[in-house]
Image (cartoon, rainbow, N blue to C red; front, top):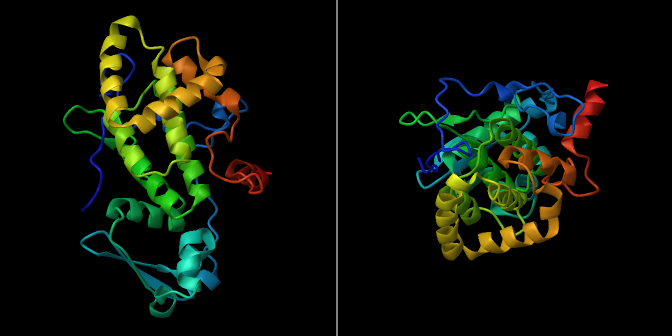
Amino acid sequence: MASNAPTALQTPHGQAMASSSPPSSLSLATTQSAEQSIVSSTAKKTLALTPEILTGDVIKLYIGSKRKEFIAHKKLLCDRCEFFRKGFNGGFEEALTGEMYLPEDNEEAFAHLIDYLYRGSLPSLRQNQHNKRWSTSPLRILYCLAEKLVFPVLMDELMDFIMLYHIKNGVHLAPSSLEAIYTTTHQDSKLRLYCAAMIVCSTSFPAKQRDDWVDGMSQMFLETPEIFRDFFIFQAKYGSNINGGDFRECLRKLSSLGVCFFHSHTEKEVCYLKQKESQDN
């Protein structure tokens, strides 16, 4: 299986998270505060799996170099995702054969995508069995797939889930994770924007940790100058809004930029948070 290896997450003090189950913050209920306006991705969603969808045509998708086969209902994929809508309803071969080959995509991420479409659930965190640290790697690889498929609702839910986890647990991304994100996202990716924000927040690490952080970041900036460019731009534009306090406090201050600041939906599209609020009322 061509999946990204899980990347260990660390606290600002470099301590491992050794819990045997995912941190409880992932099941937090929504509250009125800006930070907690993020909806927990573990909440159940109302799925529109109508008879029209379930009795309609099915299509086959072959993912990765080993051509892992996935079978799904055509209408469900096309209604939710622009990429499939254009592929299966346009003048392409896929519209005639009902089959699509995606050899460059990740089988694990695609399995998570199918699970999201049918069950409304996002992938769980992954625990490294060696050091017991938790990783958001399954969420990140699904985000990169959703970005390619032009699926902003899923991207925004994943983004909020990742941010909530980092805020509640004071976790930052390792340089290897940042570089992996930059190799699988486009220049205007909101996940890249969030990476830049995290690096800005990381400058607030305690002095005893800062030297190691500077060494790691300096090497990464040399190897991937795009990361440095985005970090510099974010610091220049928004640093005054979030600087001050420790790493976790800096992450909390990101909410001052707006609930949808790291979302990918357009101004004309309704945020999934507002859609859920309307459904609840």
